[in-house]
Image (cartoon, rainbow, N blue to C red; front, top):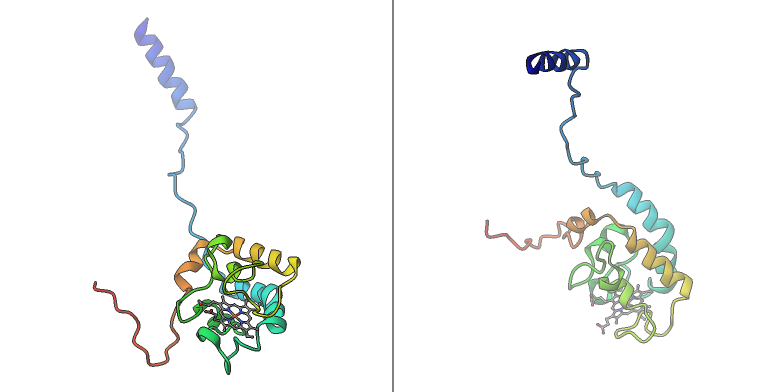
Length: 150
Ligand code: HEC
């Protein structure tokens, strides 16, 4: 009886080949689409920067070495490094300095509209974490990068 059952089951098994579960793989990491990011910088942030920040954060006059008017220099950040933390507006200098009552406050003699502040927040919120490794990259300007001990 037991044997019949085993045979029956193996027959059933034969009719119904074992399902091949595809090996579980992590989804491939999304490649960083820098072109798309730059386009969104151009559309969302640049107009604000051009109107409110260019006076002091452009190639000529770059307070704290922060140049906001180009995507690459914007990513590089200030003398202290990146001013954005992907996905974390509250930890991003760019977002902190435009809050009412912040210190320092940007622009020093004004206040961005609520819309502009919200736009900056949303932009930082939407940044992929992988962007982090692109931030603070020094351009090849002769300075030697901080070398890793490894
Ligand atoms: C009138 C000149 C002026 C304008 C306009 C201005 N800034 Fe600044 N910005 C400064 C100065 C000066 C500092 C350094 C302040 C300090 O450290 O106390 C600074 C510092 C900053 C910092 C901090 C950088 C760091 O790491 O220390 C950020 C971020 C910043 N500005 C963003 C902006 C943004 C965004 C705008 C436009 C909304 C803007 N600034 C407009 C003069 C300006």
